[in-house]
Length: 252
Image 1 (cartoon, rainbow, N blue to C red):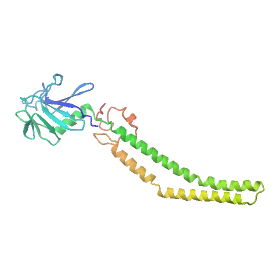
Image 2 (image 1 turned 30 degrees about the vertical axis):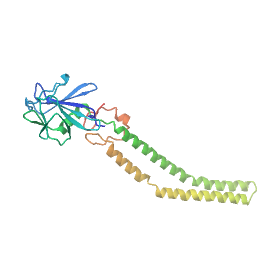
Image 3 (image 1 turned 120 degrees about the vertical axis):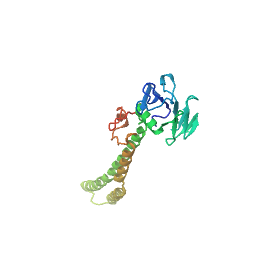
Image 4 (image 1 turned 90 degrees about the horizontal axis):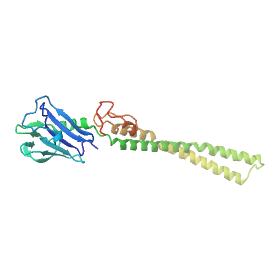
């Protein structure tokens, strides 16, 4: 799940330095980020004061990823694709401008900046790891069972010779019972041998392992830089607070 789902992003002018100020409330308080140089935002954009719950506008993020922008005061004025709005559903492609001077803001840049302060969610990687670990266990178990089947041929042939030796040692040179037992064991040994050969020829453990590793390496990645995070269990990975490659913070 995206770390922004369920969040509210407050947007407005930074009071002292007139940059674009973004604020979002999280579990440990209010976190802020700024975009642009000092003085880049004109006075037509209302100030963002998160402690007072005031701003020019806000964007609410739904649990399904939908974005809705709200103009917070009639005098603020917010435009989406050139039209003045009070409440409007957004996409990253929407052109949003603020105030009478129509100061432009980039929705994708804003959401990326907020992710950097609240962190990137990696909770979905828990299922990725569990699926990989379970699939790997089934694959290893299948290989173990195949090895067990192949190993049964030798005991069958040894047991056949051993029974013949026992019968001879007690003075039984030939009998229908001995022949039947020997024949039965030879048949079992032959079945095991050919079944083991068939399973070996048709076994796709190597190909399946290759595909399994490939999919895991594609999915078990940092949500920001997409770098493979290595073969570390999710519980161990979660002990880190940030990505070891680009140092982006991970959401709690």
